[in-house]
Amino acid sequence: MIKNLAFLCLIFVLISSCGFRSRCNNAAGHYKIGNSYTINGVTYHPKHCNHYEEIGVASWYGMEDHGTLTANGEVFDRNSISAAHKTLPLPCFVLVTNLENGRKLVVKVNDRGPFVKGRIIDLSEKAAKILGFHKSGLAKAKVQYLRKMSERLVQKAPHYKKQYEKEMQKRHPKQNSAESRGYVAFFENAQTAKSAASKLRNQGIKNVRLLFKNDRYCVKVSYK
Image 1 (cartoon, rainbow, N blue to C red):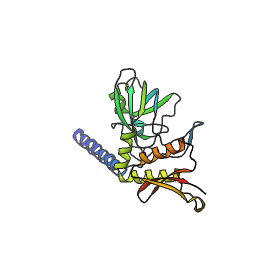
Image 2 (image 1 turned 90 degrees about the horizontal axis):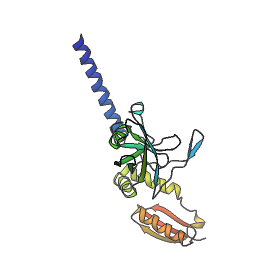
Image 3 (image 1 turned 45 degrees about the horizontal axis):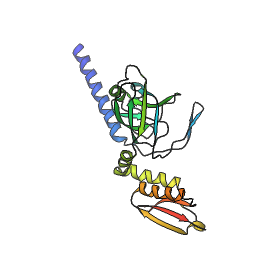
Image 4 (image 1 turned 90 degrees about the vertical axis):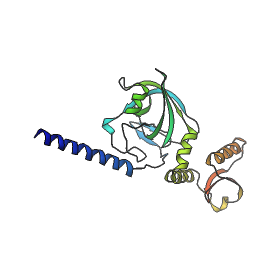
């Protein structure tokens, strides 16, 4: 009887494990910035960014959310190296430094949170263990956005890249026919195009648009 019960428990564990791996394989996730949203009376504004660095309290989440979908459609695994942030693009990479012991870890952000005042990032259980604050639950930490690594992640994954381009088009819509005339410069790299557009705006030039057209990024200065 005991042997039979042990065998059934083993079968249950194996089936559960296979089911979890299947969900992970089927949920590749998607690139997302997202619209503004309000939690507990506080409004957050997700946005594309070139630079982000903040010091605050880091926390972690694990068993209660294990196997659920993250904000960008991936399956949360408490044993993976991942995190939740309130406004950064999803997915992206950040460098987290535990300022209490000096430990550092590069983490993939694929979820939203934490929604507690003063907390700036919610790490997976494994990430918290590596950074050395699993038992205490909280730690003073520094979070730094890794732009180049994040952009490589998006550019190398076709489904991420396509969704990123749609986000760019949504935030920089095409002009109507009355504004369609102007000077255009094409770029193969998104960051180079954004840098060129930023320089033009800093020089006081108006009607500068960043578009994606014919598989290339273009900076357009329009006139009526």
